[in-house]
Length: 485
Ligand code: GLU
Image (tube, rainbow, N blue to C red; front, side, top):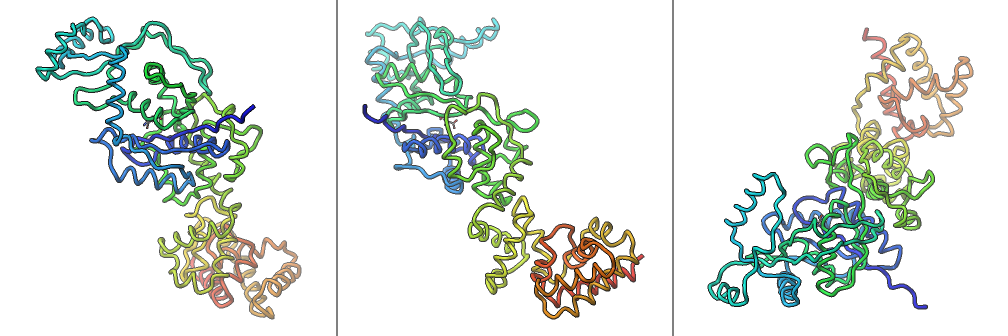
């Protein structure tokens, strides 16, 4: 028995905006399946709608895919470059009797549509309107009368076994004789897709389930063009937490928005993979190689997926801690520079210090923005004190706080060296001598030197901030406790 032929899949975005999270998710599923099976993942931009397609959008989509790590095989196919083939396919359909020329005028069609509206009936083109004799057709063509090419929908039913939904079947009576070629010679969407999918030898069409209603028309076109049918997999839509379709205006629906907000690409891909698929069990956090290992078409969902931004941030926190530091580091340093928390020179001056700082902070943050906020006390001379942290750790019992911080400062000043090994016994001895838990010493100290309630371990904090700045901040906090009311 010969090995099954590896599948050929494609992602076919219309370049009329940014890379939408729904599109990115669909691209990811196609990519995962191609990579997992040794198949081929192709990219096609559906740019036949010249009025709405832009080069910027095409570039943004490519960039978004690259950022997510979704590489494609072979050259990108630009649908607009294939219009001659689309037209030839439409003509082939006329020649083999599957389609016909329709000279019905726009005015006539408008009138028929208005009549149907008045009867509160859906408008469906009646092919009896297009019964011209060969002579009449020749005359009309000679006179240069405009015509469209319409597909002659046969009787019967059109059905397929959808990989996600199982058997789906449509009564052909529900499908009107649809146009495949406009009077200006440009193809209608369904023809262009089928013509290109045949030319690209696509074996699995995986796309959003908003395309289910196009599929019977496309199947009829494959059959009429004598081409083998691909398999179809219609993956679920993505809704917001309010249950409504994601909206570009209301939600951050562009992948680039999340990149800008400091989401790691592996976290985004992991999160997207779970919108319409699950590996089973409790497994959620997956690195790309784990997603590849687990991905299967059987576990694709039918029901709409929910885009929960809280979960995305949580997922990002997981990836921030687990990805290799060298992958996280440049993204954090870029953000630090962008937010003017540090200059590139400052960060490059002591790369080991910078790496250690980021390594300490990333395990406590969900987003790169949070790492930036937490990095401030280590990089800036002037720090901002978080009111809630100060109120809780220092102001509840002002005198006691001042007393502890004063003794802490003394112990630190007298420590033989400014290293974790020297500072730790100094503070633990102080705690013991006062009959206090270590936390009672560390918490006010943390707020005094960082201004924040959350930080790495206190000895990492002290060594990262350095002796001089730590002692100065302690002194200032003591002043503040003595003076403000
Ligand atoms: N261009 C279509 C879209 O963006 C995709 C069509 C398809 O995948 O067949 O929805």
